[in-house]
Image (cartoon, rainbow, N blue to C red; front, side, top):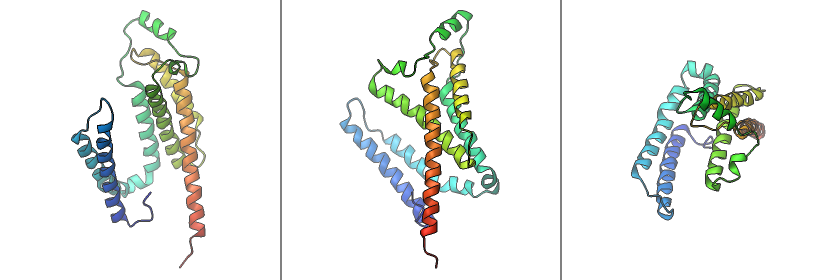
Length: 206
């Protein structure tokens, strides 16, 4: 977002922006029932922003990161998706429990959303789409023509693995939403690169 700003100034502005956003979010909780501002969240956001504008750019300049960065980005996005889908990594302890889990598979899309609280349903939907978008964007960044059907396959495998877990409900909806997110993420990266290429062509040379 701050690509046209000098590096040092961009880092400072990004850190200030992150801090101000955290302060604004915590202040906004004064108007939300059941929520209370927490200074710890501001401090954590400030520390995270500082880490993002100092340590991470330094790591990005390392040769090994420049050479293999896109692959690591894909691996990190996939690892985050796997972690979110399978945490806390509990496994059913009996055959009877496994049979009950098989009976609870949601084969009809959006079944669990029909009677759910709107806020909870939207949050869950956004999380699935967001995680898929992260994987799709990383794959598009690493490869001009990513095989996004692999994301659908991975999502299906993760949902199948949830059959063995007592804390998750396997659902066709989740696999589809992760795949839709991957398509959207890859599309956004491709569109951003296209716009950047047009701007570079139109920019006058000295």
